[in-house]
Structures are given as C-alpha cells and as structure tokens.
Amino acid sequence: AGDGDDENMTVDLNGIPFDILKVVFLLSIYDDKNEGLNYSMVRDVFIRVVNADDTHEVVRFEIDNDDLKGGNVLHVMSLVREGPKWFLEAVGKTDVTGLAGVATKYGIIVKEMQCTANP
Image 1 (cartoon, helix red, strand yellow):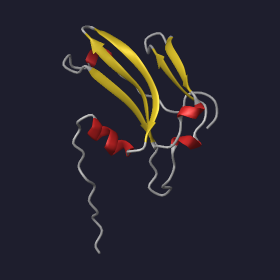
Image 2: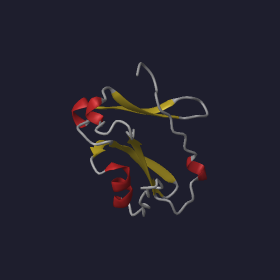
Image 3: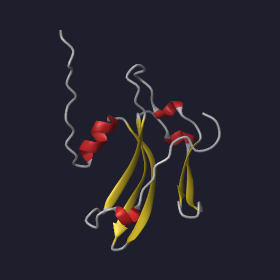
Image 4: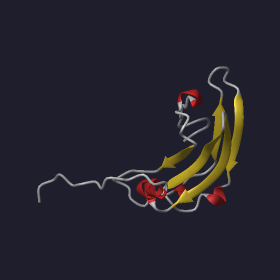
C-alpha cells in the first residue's frame, strides 16, 4: 500500500554459477487464512531494476492493470544469460497454477505439504 517500492529482491549476477542460464522472478500472493486472493485485486504494479552500486535505475516497466487478471502468481520478468551478458525479458503475466504449479513447469520437483495434525 502507498507509494514506492513495497518488495525488494537483491541479486548478485556475478555470483550466479555460469551454468545457470535463466533466472525467473515471481511474486506470489499467499495467505492461508484468505483463500481467493489474486492479482486482479492489485493495482499499479511496477518493476524497477536498480544498480545497487550507484542506485541508478536501469529499467522500469509498469504492468497494465488489465494484465493482472486472476492468478496468485505473477511472473514479473526473467534474466537470460547469453555468454557473459544478461538480458532482461519483461513478462508481467499472472498464472493460476500457484507457485508450486509454476515451479513444476520449470522442472522443479515440489514436495507435497503433509499435514502433521492428529486426526
């Protein structure tokens, strides 16, 4: 709520192993007490990439409110490595499969949550 950056992610591109060719940035709405929350309830989403050394804003893009339909996961952007260089792919699309569903699409094995409560 309010003006400015609400969430921040910091990535050291030089620290990413060279065999990693893609980094995907996702935002997830998760609140186990309020099921049904989704990105159609969010407005004025923008993404900024800032150089931490000099605080220079490298790129900024705003996600159109019409693109925030349903889904509790927002694929914000991807960084793709080609040789020594990184390229940004702005995406800004929601996904209705949830965070586990998106992880599975990228080949990540997601362990199913198990209930530890006694029946």
